[in-house]
Amino acid sequence: MKATIYHNPKCSTSRQVRDMLREAGAELTVIEYLKTPPSKAELKRLYASAGLTPRQGLRMKEDAARALADAPEEAILDAMAANPILIERPLVETEKGVRLARPKEKVYEIL
Image (tube, rainbow, N blue to C red; front, side):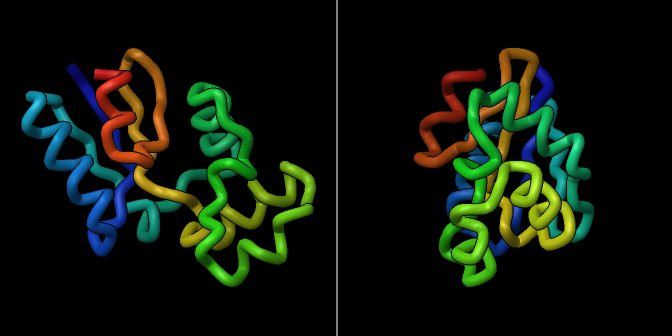
């Protein structure tokens, strides 16, 4: 099974999910999204596949996210593409779908 994780190595949940994927035997592609941010179109696709709105994928712990709480979805996507720290992590994609692995056990839904 192939899996892609949008990963932040400084995030303990992201590291744990990466390790869970490896333990499950996934052929893993790790994208450090702060260094290689997904495009607006890619974010839109990922959230649609996960059944999430961009607002649900917004990392509200970030100060800049609070200003977007009432913003239109397109503005949230624009902000995430421009400032990827606003993307909640980790996002994981397999052939079974996409999950925002929070809590981390949600990743099992697509393994």
